[in-house]
Amino acid sequence: MLNLLKSLMDLIYRKKCYFCGNSKYSLKMCPKCYDLLEFADKRTSRVLKGCDIYCAGTYTKELQKLIRGLKYHKQKELAYYQAKFMYEYFSSIEKLKSKNYELVPVPLHSNRIKKRKYNHMELVCQEFSKLSGLSCNFNIIKRIKDTKPQYKLNRTQRLNNLSGAFEVDKSFFNSKPILIIDDICTTGSTFEEMINEFNKLEIYDITCFSTSTPV
Image (cartoon, rainbow, N blue to C red; front, side, top):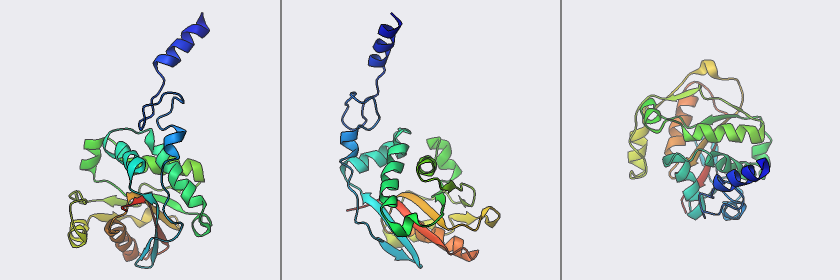
């Protein structure tokens, strides 16, 4: 009787895939949909102020829905799949996996966190840390300016929008190489402004890593 009840409860409360609605695996992202994620070329995407930028995938279809689901629709369980996707790319590049990085997510302003209730990239960093064994540092840099959304701005407007947006507290620096983590790298302006702030305090060993880049 107990086994029958358990089976019935499992059937009722099985998770559906956020992407295709399939409940066969009782996962937020089923293996079939995960395998549809598209990796980008395994090379440096660009270099900003002497820092390499890597992008794990292209911002299309399933990866777009994965990022937006976590970022805007409170689908926190998707942080694991975003981190897994990034980690698989990370592990395939010797230059990346050879360093003992400290993971630093792009910070949100306190007003944005109050509205959203969480920083999606902190969740991704936590999952990435579990997969990689690398430590997280959520205190070394803060967003002190409540900036406008970047997606409607051109590169010059983005840089102006982000000017003075970040502040580094060097007391939290642990002398490790820094891996800045973000979800989308379009013009690289967010990374660039963060690099500027680190450089002001003579912190230079920085690599930037985003989940995706626009096609």
